[in-house]
Image (tube, rainbow over all chains, first blue to last red; front, side, top):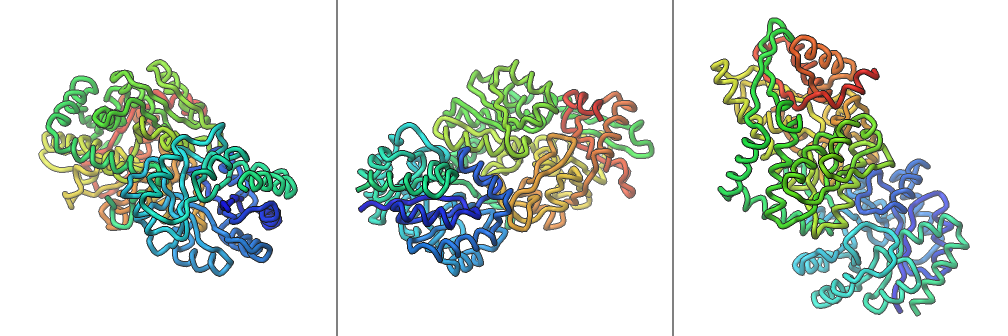
Length: 230
Length: 369
């Protein structure tokens, strides 16, 4: 069965929302630790990050949020953030404290594979990545590879990126690690299309939008994705 | 590619291959006489290099302050040195579209100018607050055929405009060159911009030797991202008797009151809180209103080669008015910060100041104060 990954920004309601996402069929939760200048994010996650910061969700609060999510759900939890957060908190301290709070790994969007090897993390590869870089990322990655399905920022799109098939093909030829694809995937139909190519589907911006409507809306939305992946 | 512990490439993977390509392209260009000939031709026949040094005795009686007159460069600021160089480089790399960010609008105007000259597509991101403050430059960019895209969130200034330009670049990286305006951003940008601006320091060094028969006792320049400063300073870094002073806006002192952090692809000294969240900068000058600074400046600060000090809005405004009234030169608000500190240096008599741009763009903002 394909893996369904749901991204949520850490906010006070997030533990309840994460529980709803898992009820709906999420296999893994990415927890966004908000940063003031998130270069890879489109408007939805950027705005959600601004809101979370305005509500006081700094690194310590996000780690508390992670711990509370851990108390409520069994699935793997992966903090997703930017290098600036780790730089300020301390790279190794970040790893230690998030692991202690229940994290399985981490994703640091703007930390290329050659930087900060002391941080075990899920590496990202993109359609622009060379085969050499894909191979390096696959070797270094912590569990699975995050395929950035398109050349661009996060956010819902009309269609699944035509670049994904080629990226999956190139990556499969280089590694046996599981490949989960994200960026621009928002509907059950998208999820079904992606599932024909990759081992898992990551849904971020649209999940954040559904989460704003409350746990029930999020659970129903995640269930609709789950149904498309069966 | 690093400057001590600063610099690096803190960007999403999508951009790394483009940075590799840029690094290789820049190395090839630097080694190619044809590149240097083309750039030199443009700088001399189009941009108006070399720019003169002007002695301003009425502005600072009792001192010999020379201004490096980048205000006389085509488009009115030093930004054109970098824009022309990167334009030639982008064409070599086969990029037909460029994006840029701008704060004061001077880099935006320089970029729009270059791309009108080269006949390519140009998009400039600018914060709404800066568009209000620097309306003449918005109109100039439009006239030159650039599309100015307002950035209406966050601080609505240079920080947000830079983030949006980088997001555009992430989206269009295969066709687009990001023409960054200062010595900031991921490697190799800080080095490229420095190399393209060091013409300023190299010229000034020769000129002051010709005029005075000796080196200046101090060299002073304003620092926002720090491109005119790094260019000017590079002419004098190895002259260890020359005191070098960078002047930041007091409310945007990334070096004076910042901490180590990551912003816009580089590790440098930034205005941030203890969690690494970037703080708002505050300056009357849109070109200095930025919470980061080039990583090489952080390095030069740490090794003690360059001192970085601050000037307030009020001090800059006073210097702005005084230079206009005593010398008939209307400086931009950015170098007015350098002028304010330079005239107060107690131990130095012969001083070189980078006059990075002209102040026409600032008249409305100054008259409003």
